[in-house]
Figure 1 (cartoon, rainbow, N blue to C red):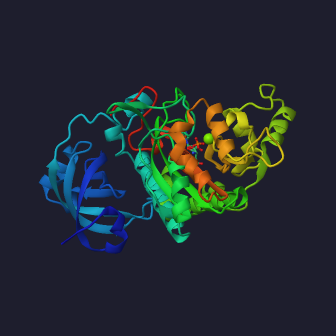
Figure 2 (tube, rainbow, N blue to C red):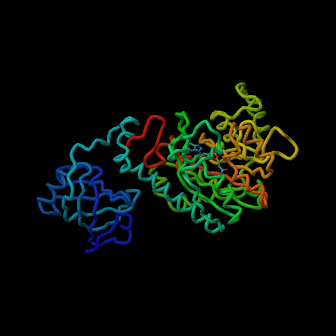
Figure 3 (cartoon, rainbow, N blue to C red):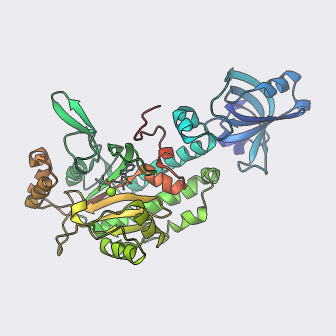
Length: 432
Ligand code: 4AD
Ligand code: MG
């Protein structure tokens, strides 16, 4: 008899198979028990009929408690009433591991309780669906970048630089020196782009931000791209193609997970249409003021109500171009004819999901970079290696970083970024 995974049930209709699974839930009456089973690949229903199995099997099924692990033998049948489409007609059950008083019951629990039990919460159907979407976004990322000839370059996690500014750094001892956990691999990727042309990184990123919003993690994963001999306009095209590719891949390969989460696929389909609209920072400020926002003036960074309003006016992800120099990092290329803005863009997702990409063309002039590093309150001596890029064959180059969890939150249509990562690190949480 073959041992199969639930996800492959469709290939075994009419056959008797063996499955290792956990009992996620159970309903019993005098003559029939319905076991909701999960094996990590999917969920489906197993039906135990009193008149079709030995008495002890029926008794055992009735006594199974939530999250007991079992071997179960039965016949795969079509089940047109369920979303999954198949069920198991049970013949035999063997208990593998008992489970008593499982903390997460089918009733409602508060988020703090669920977060304290994140190691178990991952087993529930919504969290399971979300992690499958995360996996698909990761898979599609590699597929997209490999097809486009990008070379993966892993920047260090322990660094001496602070490309995004010094306010949110995690400091640690590096023997007799101070090191920081990486807040972006970008500067290293710029060096790598001069050696390999088109490069990317995909790794953990650390920001000691005292932000407790639904968009902020302390530890998140970022995909960063860097491209030599490339200007900002070409980078924007790659950004929108990449995001549309991710959305399309999830539509193609995560149909069931999207159903479990109740995500409207017609809305997602809109986000595969290119190009995404572009609006300048200047026009965005004007748009907000015209629409009654009196808490914003030119020079301010946008807050989430502002971003939400701007993106919702387009019903699509939207690029906001060329922010004030004063609120952006030192490495961004200055505008050719204005000294108050830099050549950059943030991609803002609609439906209130906010910024999912930050990127720019990079400054290449040595003197300008030194001046900007100083203006950022840092010491150019720490950036000697980086400044070498402007000394030896500097070329126009551009790049960006996409936040993995924010992108998942947006594609999956969930409320909070904490559910888009297996074990979130939040302002007040490092457990479990
Ligand atoms: O806009 P950020 O800070 O850009 C950079 O780090 C650049 N060095 C990227 C580059 O050009 N190579 O971060 C990029 C993205 C944001 O748009 C957002 O999606 C995500 O990273 N991000 C966060 N995600 C979760 N929690 C946080 N605290 C985040 N901070 C940024
Ligand atoms: Mg940003």
